[in-house]
Image: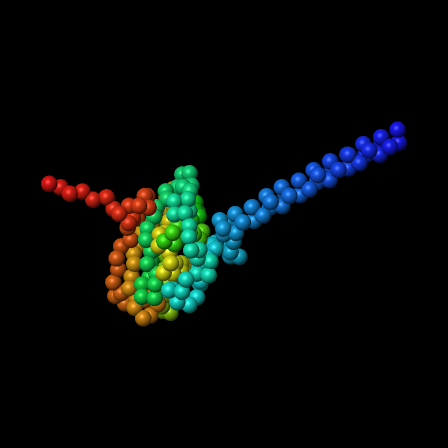
Length: 225
């Protein structure tokens, strides 16, 4: 009888150990998966409550130096952002090498502040740029992919532009625009400077925005007879 009790106790102990190992494995796997998701998709809040963001590419140096984390392959379609309900997802092609820069305007016509998600993708759809921008109620923000001249005109000084360093490796970008937020932008040429000087005529080409990423590269055209 005593041996029978010990046998039952042994079986129970083994079962408890098995379930314990299974629970630990599941728990740590879930934690690792959550950590990976946060690292990729959740920006780190800034201390001043302003814009938040995570820039995957190099923040300094030449715009033509590839980001350290730029992958060699990717799935273009699966990498594109999922539309946020109630927001307009638009795509555009930025230009940001050592001789060009992209300027974006964000207008918030709503009476409450909104967060605008800006994302950039490499030629194979890998996420290489991520920035969340806090646009105050009834306010305006300017973004530039290069540094601004030390003495910009008043319209560029207040509010100060946000630097959005796409580098030459962002081939496609997206903006998720909440209700009431409008966007516009253009590409400028600044050969040999790497600095945007609004007081100089640097030439500009308007950006083309589209809700369909394919139409950014291949716009629909019609031939009238």
